[in-house]
Length: 80
Image (cartoon, rainbow, N blue to C red; front, side, top):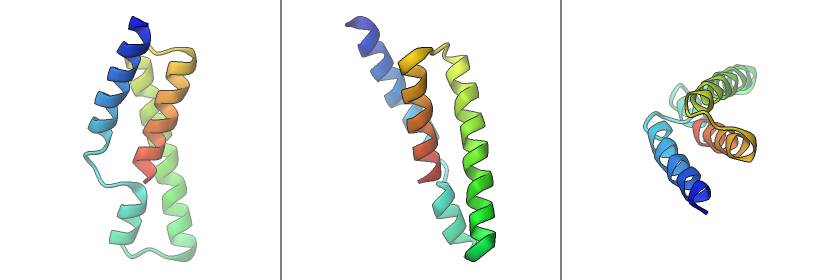
């Protein structure tokens, strides 16, 4: 039970940290991108977010379901 609570707290805190910057979709809208430029920008942004989230999960020493859940939410929040 304690491990689940600790994971939940860690996910909440880390999600708040990643929510500071603009999401990929917001950044694309701000840059007024459309069509292929927008698609390319979003693809690169999502790839960068995935790499960043993976590094963060390694720093937190997450494994298994906690790692997958953290990375999925982290990327979703970053992409917007």
